[in-house]
Image (cartoon, rainbow, N blue to C red; front, side):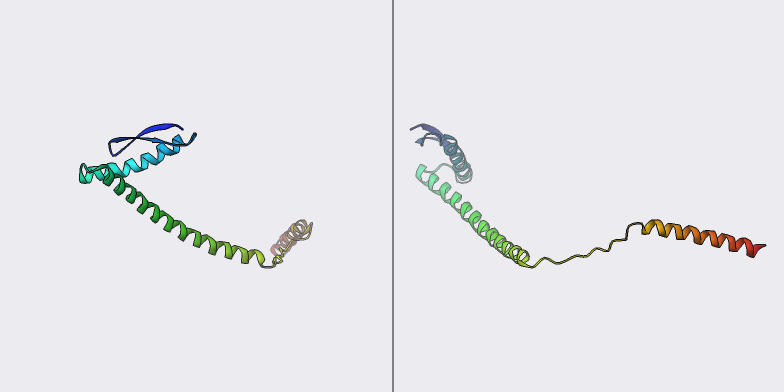
Length: 128
C-alpha cells in the first residue's frame, strides 16, 4: 500500500492509499490544502485538528451547494425530457410543399417572350 506525504495548511501528513489511487489522493489533498491555507491566512496558526475540521467543513459546504445545484439541473432536465417525450409521441404531421410542374418555367419564359414580341409589334403599328 503506497504512502504519500501531502501538505495541508503548511503541515506535512503521511497517508496511505490503495495502489493506483495516488493521483486521486493528491488531488483531494490539494482541495483540502486550499481551504486550510485560506483558514490559516485569515485566522492564523491553529491546532492541527481544528484546522483539518474547519477545512473539511468548508469543503463539505461547497459540496452541499454543488449537490443542490445538481439536483436543480436534474429537475430541469427531467422537465425537458418529459417535453421531448411528448413531442416524440405526437403523430408526424404531413407537410406538403408546392412543386412547380417540370417545364413550367420554360413555358412561362416562352409566353413572356411572345408577349414582349406582340407588344413590340403593336407599338410599331401604333407608332406608324
